[in-house]
Image (cartoon, rainbow, N blue to C red; front, side, top):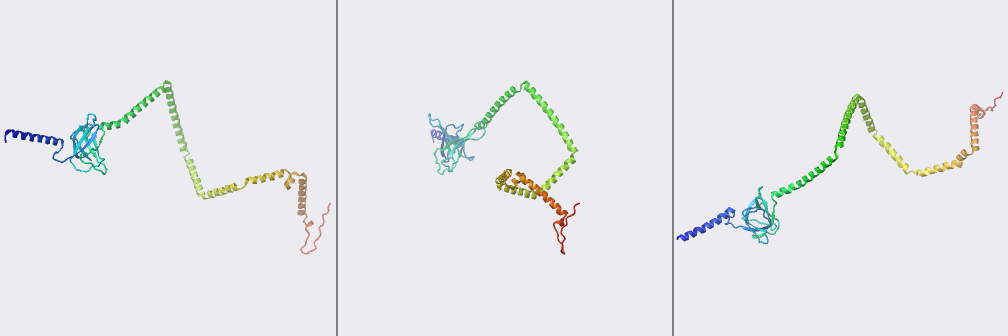
Length: 318
């Protein structure tokens, strides 16, 4: 083996070792049969060659290459190499995600549920997760807007308060607060008096409460009777409602009209003075007759159990 051959052999071996070592450092095992897939992004957000490819947090491959598509189309073509064999549905999403708070990027495969599967060399659906700064901005921005609105409202309120509470207004407010303090003092004194009155009349109040309890007890015991009375009132009101009150009142009105017009016996009696005089005369004579019967019963009744009654003899007048 001559010197040139040895030099060539060691050079080729060094190149092979260098390629193998570089790929090993990148995480690519050239001895394994990897499956390559592609995804197109407008912005990869700092994704680098050698970034891991994860499925549910488990590493299944790595990013093997990143290239610009064309000078006109400045989208980026990302090549991922998977060293694990598993089925991926056609709607699997190749999503760029944040691995830590420092913004280190990686790719997470969001496995789909389609029936059709992808094969090596297919282009997957691309996606990108917002950065930590974007998430913080999304949470902070609404609070920032609300804080600015609140500060503006406070400024407006302070301007209004400053305009309203001038010297005279502040003096009036001070006087109102002073009057309010006096009112509270009077209320306190009144409550003290009420407490003293309650203490003095404690026995009377107890008796009143006892009487009220007795009344409520009686009402409760008489509940059945009260219900009966109410039922009777309800029946009476129903009967009055069903009765033809208007007809009855009309008949009474007609009768009084006839009496006032002198029609009928009662009308003639009330309107005709002769009938009234004859009636009065008859009643006087009837009263005299009854009085005479009481005084002289033998004049009108004359009988004897044995027989032979004596005739009535009028008394001699002097």
